[in-house]
Amino acid sequence: MTLNKVIRKRLTMKTRKSMFGLLFVSPIIVGIVFIYFRVLIKSIVYSFGKMDAQFINHFVGFENYKTVLFVNPDFVRDVMESVGMLLINIVVIIIYSIFVSSLINRDIKGKGIIRAFLFLPVIISTGVVSKIQSYDIVNQFSSISNAGGNVSQIANGLLQADMIEKFILSLNVIPQVSGIVVVAIQNIFSLISQSGVQIIIFLAGLQAISPSIYESAYVEGASGWEVFWKITIPMLSPLILVSVVYTVIDSFTNSSNKIIQSIYYYITQTVDYGISAAMAWIYFTLIIFILLIILPLLSRITYYNNH
Image 1 (spheres, rainbow, N blue to C red):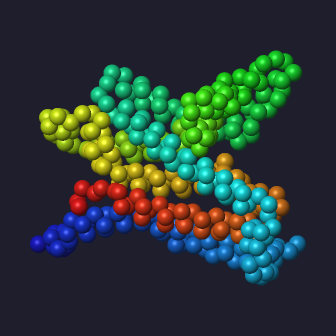
Image 2 (image 1 turned 30 degrees about the vertical axis):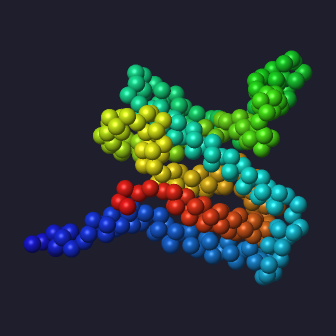
């Protein structure tokens, strides 16, 4: 008996899966240890120091952290806005991703065209459109066209947020809900472009569910609504957990995030590595703290097949 067969015989299926998972993430582990670990250590050193004109770092203790938290007028406010936007992004992106993945998973005519159409914003957002957003060309075009006519109204959007809010309030919807809807509509393109990975995750999860489970449920008289909530959602709950974690990290590290822009500004414009590093580590700690809150909460309602 060969060594390979002996190892396979002694290892359990769970151990094999764990080893396969470790092998799968081994490239990023190697990258962190041999490439990024040195950068992280240097970033920590910068956060406790101050650069002089000769780019020599001098230890100043927690001075940079105190400046960021208690002197900088924008950091704490921007962090609170980012957390508020995160809550809205999670709800909208997860609901939209589940809806789209359920739609394109159906056996309907023109499914390929529908998939291409739904993924189009995700694809173009990585190219020219992202450059347009980065350089704010649309706003420049709007300001130029103010002298010419009503083109700026088109550039600013056909649906105005205040009109939508008034319409929602006329339906006696509570202000908190109307605010969420208005913010979601204002950022609809950004939210759609950030849903590509989640859609793929949910689509893979839907295709992994055995059709016999649905057939048995329909034979027992279950409606489509009951099948969705009692079969589809529980079976997708592990992937919902993964998608929420991905959405949190993606939202917090997106280049359009104000905190990321502030960190980049202090690096490139003021060349203040101490302040930027302190901002980055405070922000990183906040992300870890939010994930430590979300993971246990969602894990309690997550269903696993092997349980």
